[in-house]
Image (cartoon, rainbow, N blue to C red; front, side, top):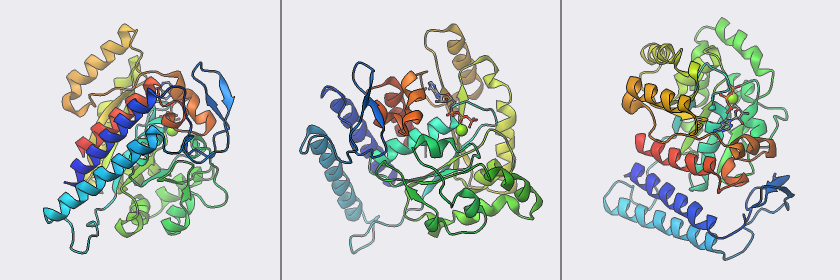
Length: 344
Ligand SMILES: Nc1ncnc2c1ncn2[C@@H]1O[C@H](COP(=O)(O)OP(=O)(O)OP(=O)(O)O)[C@@H](O)[C@H]1O
Ligand SMILES: [Mg+2]
C-alpha cells in the first residue's frame, strides 16, 4: 500500500514535471542557493534569490495541490483498509536506505544519489543524503559545505539529528562530507566492528523522519563503502556505458553478497543503472546489450543519457530537476525514481 502510494505520487510529480515543462520558459522555484540558472536558449542567467514558485497560483501550484490531495485520498484509503493506526496517524514506515555504490570512479554515483533524492523530495518524500565520500561531491553538488560537523562525526557517534543540514531543495537534507573523512578509512579498518558504525548511526529511530536515505559512496570498496552496505536496505549500482564498465561488476556483486552474508542479511540489490548513455554510439548499444544479457532483470529498464545539463547542474549547486527540468537528464531521473520505488 505504502509503495503504491509512493509510486502514485512520483507519477503525479512526473506528470507535473511534464506539464510544467509546457508552461514555457523555466520558472525557477524553491532553490535558494541558485546563483545562476539556464534560460530556454541555454545561456546562463542570474537567478533571483527566490524561494517560492515564480507565479503564485500557477499551474504548477495547482498540480502540486492535486498531488497533495491524492496523498490525502491514498491515506484515507489506507485508513479504511486498516493499514494505518486509528487516530489518523500514518503507521511509521522505516526509512528505506539506499547505498549508491561502485568501486569504479566517475560512473555517476553522486549524480544518481543527488538526483534520485531530489525527485523523491519533489514528490513530497522526506529524503536524506549522507555524503560518504571525502571528495564531498554530493555536498558541493547541492551548493553546501561542511561547516564544522560532517559525516566523520556521524561515524564518531554524534547523533544524526545534530548533523543534518537542510538543502535548498524542500524535503531534502544532507549530512555533508569533508576531506578529513579520508582519515576514517584508516580508523574504521583498525576498529573492532568498524564496519557497523554507520548502521548504528542510521538505526531506525534516527532515520525515522525520513522516507528515503541515500548513501553516496566513494570510488573504492573500502571501509566507508562496507559501512554503507552494512547500513543499507538496498544498493543501486550505477554503471557507465563504456568499454571497461562490465569489468569488475561481477566481483562487485560478489562483494555485495559477501557483505550481505557476513554483516547485513537484509541487503538487496535494487538494480544496476546504466548511466552516461550516448545513444548515438554503437558502443553504448553494445554495452547495454551485454549488461542486459548478463544481468537480466537486475538492470534498470530506464537508462540515463549523457546530458550536458546533468554535468552542469552541480556547478550551480542544484539537482538537474531544478537546474533544467526539461532536460533529458531530468526526465530520465524521474523515471529511474519511479522504477526504484517499484523495485523496492
Ligand atoms: N548522465 C550524465 N551525463 C553527463 N555527465 C554526467 C552524467 N552523469 C554524471 N556526469 C558527470 O560525470 C562526472 C562523474 O559523475 P559522478 O560524480 O556522479 O560520478 P561518481 O561515480 O560519483 O564519481 P566518483 O567515483 O569520483 O565519486 C561528473 O562530472 C558528473 O557531472
Ligand atoms: Mg561521487
